[in-house]
Amino acid sequence: MLSKRIIPCLDVRDGKLTKGIKFKGNIDIGDPVEAAREYYEQGADEIVFYDITASSDARNIMLDVVRRVAETIFIPFSVGGGIRSVEDMRAVILAGAEKISINSEAVKNPVLIDEGAKAFGNQCVVLGMDVKKVAIRPEIPSGYEIVIHGGRIYTGRDALQWAKEGESRGAGEICLNSIDADGTQEGYEIELTRLVSSQVRIPVIASGGAGKAEHLLDVLNDGQADAALIASIVHYRTHTIQDLKTYLNGHGVKVRMQW
Amino acid sequence: MIGIIDYKAGNLTSVARALHYLGEPCEVTDDPGILDSCDRIIFPGVGAAGEAMVNLRSQGLDLRLREWVASGKPTLGICLGTQVIFERSEENDAVCLGIVPGSVQRFPGDLKDREGRFLKIPHIGWNHVEFPRSHPVFKDLPAAAEFYFVHSYYPAPADDRWVIGWTDYGLRFCAAIAHENLVAVQFHPEKSGAPGLQILANFCRWEGNDAQ
Image 1 (cartoon, rainbow over the protein chains, first blue to last red):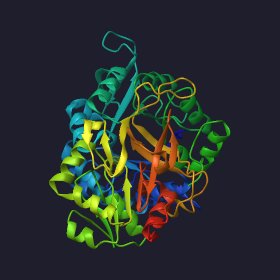
Image 2 (cartoon, rainbow over the protein chains, first blue to last red):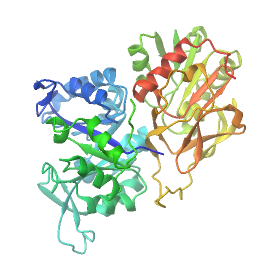
Image 3 (spheres, one colour):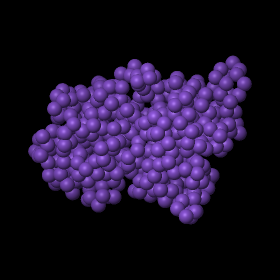
């Protein structure tokens, strides 16, 4: 059977990791390529790069990072952040990424999902969704609303409806990020994850809130997630990916144990 | 030299990068003359079968590929490259190369796991491949090795004797075939970490013809 995937997420600004990642002997590694190599060797099933570079002229720096990563690791990786057009997608894919993740831009211009899927195949397009829990109201029947720009702007879109729309437009996967849980290290938003994962037929990657191995177990079992995105839990060396997988495997979750 | 057939099907550079990493000289090209002179051929691809066949035909590569396989040049198909070597695909109802008898079918929409939950399509991620017999291209792999898949359609050869790898995803499907000097896999060895690189390295050293 298919394994559940464990996916570290690296934030990159101007070609550097935004948070120092402490590997071996507390050496601060600011190079995303080295961090990707470390996670590849630890057994990451995939890697996500999120480019938070503000200026558009620095985009070429990110493309150079993507090229170097593609020469270094031989597992799939995706790139998100700042992708506004099919041409942006093409540049990232030609540089060596398997997938591109679109988030706020897809909300503003949903046709981007269709265009990306048509140009590169559904498997290339990951719909990133930032979600906040809100009071249920007619336009938000699920009680989860799509927010953009890091959670600052409420869009009036219902998260579940948007997930279904993204699927029908051709997204190959959904990366579902709970803004409420993000950065808390207190656990994933299980209800939200289960709600979306049980109602779409494409894989759902849960994101936001991982602080302990149990959190991954919960979201992969109760949350019905197909994959779990992790950041601080491995960046701060609380755990290695191998530790997390050993724990999950010991609790009956099928994960890839040999690499 | 290993020729990687360029037929405008997705990004073909990831296979070339993996071969560079292994120190194997290769060239991504659509030039039949160059491909003719290569001692091995890799036929990769990501995308849809219908469009792939249109591109292959317009470049005249469909006929050449049949010739290379018939002449015994060691050939490795990957993902879409594997699918289009069959007779037809349910994707775009495409007539394909017909090098291997059989068809390519879509995973049924009502596939369920053991708990009765619907399985997601595409089949994306890492899955085990069971190799029922030994083969030089699939040697020296760890018993529990998993490989990276991303596909909604799967190969269904007319004859199970061609199957060299089985994978379970709600149903048991053919993940790898081997016949004479042709080997083809549904998964992506270039994205499957060390076991995938091992398969590529094995292929690069394979002289062919000792498939059972």
